[in-house]
Image (cartoon, rainbow, N blue to C red; front, top):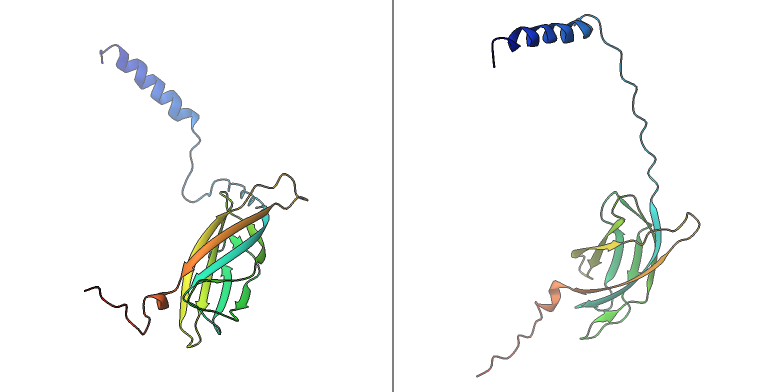
Length: 162
């Protein structure tokens, strides 16, 4: 920087510092106004779940509950009344779900409890549809295929090919 520009910069620095009010540590400055917390309106949908589960039979319980705090709905419990070697299809489960997140994601925890009390948890996610207005609640259908670990632990092993 040329020597001629230094005095001009020095005078500019003095002018800037003179315009800044001095704040001492003893005197607190004006406290900033607290920002109001924005009211979060959730997105509500009626979600109809179709669950098809392999490896369950009579006596198993299926519990569906929110998987995180941004998802809101009443937990649902169903009991499997019949079962065979194939997948069990539960009757349609309807949930009035609300998502408080910006991406409209509703996380579900599907907990399967066997007759022996052992629980298996499956987490699934549903992206809710946007609401055109506050009075309209969109309806969404979703199918989930689940396989319990009991499918892998059958008592009779598969015959080995010779």
